[in-house]
Image 1 (cartoon, rainbow, N blue to C red):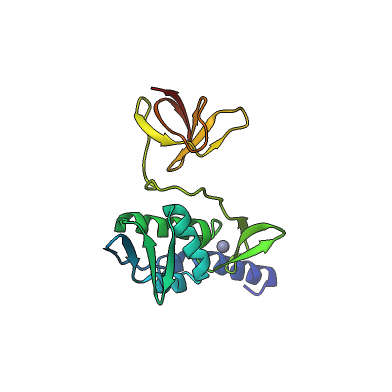
Image 2 (image 1 turned 120 degrees about the vertical axis):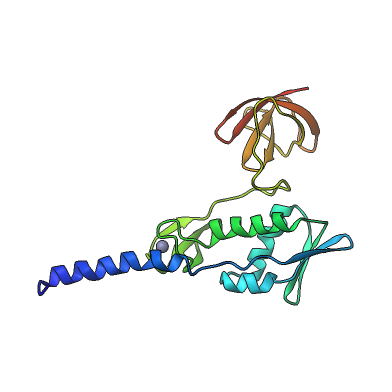
Length: 203
Ligand SMILES: [Zn+2]
């Protein structure tokens, strides 16, 4: 092991293997929430933002966007307008961690959000990797919802595709609705699902 190259390799190897061990040590506290009147109180909001080492306003903006509601940070708590289940809030915290905290290269949470030009990047202090953060669209549906072909449902048309079809988003799916106009609520049947794209017909 006197060969300097060998020593260097050994050191590099140690640096590569070390992060996987510490992944297990990173635990995100469970979100503690309760419903109070017409609002939902997220008691340990600041504790979680601080554990994730993320800007409270950024974390808040994400949650509000996903919940599709308004709210405010109040001391150490966050208060959302509307009643939301604890499971939903915990799922959103997990999504936030996946999108804005965990490095997709090494799986470590030792990351920072940096702006490069106008693109938001997740830069990893552990492995030096970086990636653009995934853009999400606001939605109110639980993140885990799975759609199936033949399902009939009411959807809100949010925008119009380049081809002129109405676009609705449900969970991770993008749905195309012929003739749908933004702001409309339409009843559709899912005719085909391809990946995260769902084709529909009006019913
Ligand atoms: Zn990394």
